[in-house]
Length: 189
Image (cartoon, rainbow, N blue to C red; front, side, top):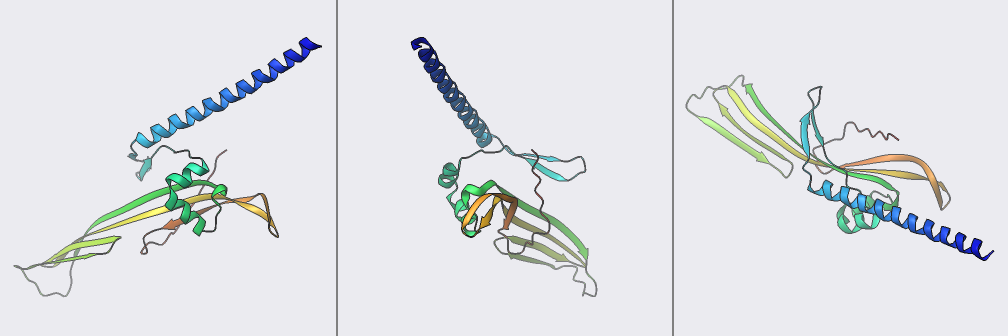
């Protein structure tokens, strides 16, 4: 009986040590992946359909780490009415659009020696151009930052919240000239 008790105790201790080892190993792997994600450059490429695309590594943070390292994002998530512990993912995407435009002018007085320049700028859009003869050349450059938060929506009964009713994605554009036209999030399990 005493030997059975000792064997059972050793088995429990071995199980606890194995569980601790596996948990520590998982944490080490997570931290290694995070280090690689922080040092790796974003890869820009062109998709097979010719669209501009980018690929970047995923940073895996715990809720407390996210609050400490990304305090501004945490405040913005709370401002959206989302509890931080219900957030599944947060993504930032910065977009820059640059277009060079050359268009002929109509019904204008021809000035062969004069080139007129124009420049307009606000924090998000810059337009630079010139009018020479009957042609307008301009460059329009727009910068935008998107904040994307994927979160769980809890089931509710009065003040009680439990489980998951659904998963939603919230997208915030920092550029007031931008209107979000389409958004899609697909989770593959």
